[in-house]
Amino acid sequence: MKRLAILGATGSIGTQALDIVSQHPERLRVTAMAAFANQSSLEHLASRHNSPRLALASKGLEPLIEMAQADDVDMVVVAISGAAALLPTIAAIEAGKEVALATKEVLVAAGELVMPLCQKHGVNLIPIDSEHSAIFQCLRGYRHDQIRTLTLTASGGPFRGRKSLEGITVEQALNHPTWRMGGKITIDSATLMNKALEMIEAKWLFDIAMDQVKVCVHPQSVLHSLVEFHDGSMLGQLGWPDMRLPIQVALLWPDKVPNQMRPWNPVETPSLTFESLDETVFPSLGMAREAERLGGTAPTAFNAANEAAVARFLKGEIGFTEIFRTVERALHHHVVNSLSLDSILAADAEARRFVHG
Ligand code: MG
Image 1 (cartoon, helix red, strand yellow):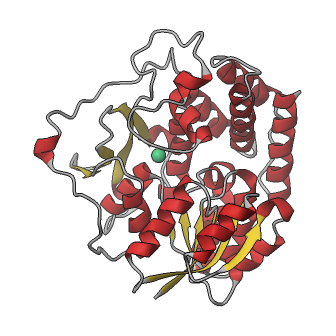
Image 2 (cartoon, protein in one colour):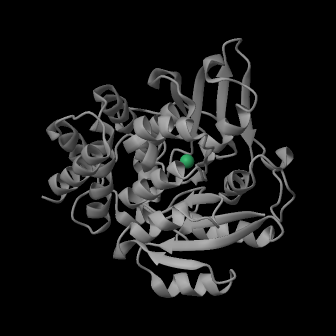
């Protein structure tokens, strides 16, 4: 029986993780749950899962840190958004807990601290992000120095193939063609900022150089990513675009257990197509490369500026393409510091202040 603390239980990933728990009551049990601020829906979910301990991140991070280190927790599922995820994740690793990570911002901002900490404490950090889950599965039995490249697949979002992104509305940007996700990540998929963050996430997770991380547009979202080895052979993982699969992979790792999901059938997908991304229309990937090149706190500032710019776009305060310009300005304004917990939190706060004016 694996005992879970789910941080971000009321969000899209959290509720799907609870669905997986319900499908495997003999293997998984929730002993603690946290959300950001939504107490009533947290209590409602808790009543259906043996009434675990509860906490709200909006009232302070201390209870989440305690949850992440509690004796009756074997694995911490990190699906709470933004900076609130960082300290509990570090606490979980320091306590030797297995971590299933959905919040890619943790690695974008602090991969340089988090990955060595996992090594030190012998902690398995298992990605929930579908692309990284695919790579994680394909790499079983291989080493990072055997990798030539990783190719992250991208659906291309609702504006795939467009030559201009001017005048796009919030409603258009929230209408993702293949994945059903929360508001922020749906906008990040439309701007391709999500893929940009995933490049940095992959770099840390799989210990490879940024120029080994490639992106390929694949509108059907069936091939979830590719690993190319030095001998030229490639491995990929396929499945319907359903986040419950990578969630189950992480929660039950390394076991493979039957579930209620309908398996992918090749003859039901008449064609899988691939195209390159037009980086003159979508400047996001280049900005991630620049943030990574600057190093230190630059990826933190990049991530925080994007989060703040998306919030302003969703409120109707700035236009769609202003997200790019805003993040770029914040990145240039940012003074890069070497990485520590304090410099990460300071860079995060400063980039948000810059964007919100
Ligand atoms: Mg992803």
